Length: 311
Image (cartoon, rainbow, N blue to C red):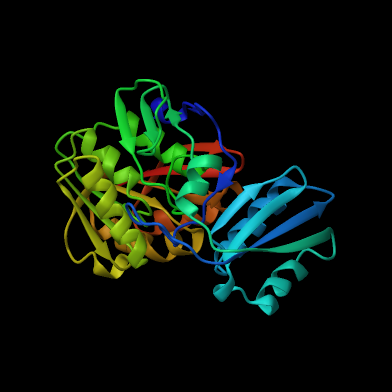
C-alpha cells in the first residue's frame, strides 16, 4: 500500500471542486450554453470542514460546480434547477455556530467549454507517473501514463482529494489481467487508468446518463476498447466477479452497497473506497467487516479518506 501514499502533485493546481458522484457533463465537442446562478458563500469564522460539508450538501441539491475562495466558496447551478427554499434550509444548519453571507449573481448563457479552458481545468500530475489533461492543453510534462479528459463538470479529473488518492492506488496496484469494476465512474478516469495498466476488462457504472456517455467518450478518446459502461447502481451488477472494485461514492451509498460489492469480489480481491471523511471510516469499516472484508490500508488527505478492503 505504500504506493498509494504518494501525494498528488498539481502541474498547475486549479481550485474547482467537483460533485460526487452525480453531475452534469459536457459531451465531446459540445458547446453548452445556459443561464447559471453563481452564489458566493462566505463563512465566518471560516472552517475548511464547513466548506467541505456545505459543498457536498449543495452538490446533492443540483449545484454542479464549486470554486474555493479564502472565506468560503462560489457555487454554480443552472437557473432552472435552483430552489431557494432548499438552499436556505441547507444554510440554516450552520446558523448556530457560523455567520453565513450570501451573494447571488445571474450568469447569462455562455460557452462553458471555453470557460473551463480559460479558468479551471489545468494539467495535473499524479504521483510523478500519471498526467491528466484536456484535449486543448498544449503544454504539459511527459509522464508514463497520459489520460485525456474532455472538459466537463463531472467528478473525476484528479483534482479532488478522493480522485487523486484513488488514482494513486490504481497506479500502485498490479492491474495486469484483472477484471476491474469502477462504481460511480463519473468521467471514467479510474477505469481508463486501470485499462492502461493492463486490466483484462473494465466495467464502469454510474446512475447519471450524462456520466455514462461522458465515460464512453473519454474511453474512446484514450484508445481504451475494453471498458464497458452501464447505467444504474449496484443492482445492475448481477453475478459477475471482479478482482478489483473501485468505489468513489458517498458514504451512505458505500455502507448500503458494501454487501453487494463483497458478493461480486473474487477471493483475495480488493475494494478501494473513497468519497467520505475521516470521521466516517469506522462506519465504512463496520459495514465491510459484516460482509467478510478486512481493512488492508488507509490514506487521508485533507480529512478525505481512501480505504482498501480485502476479501
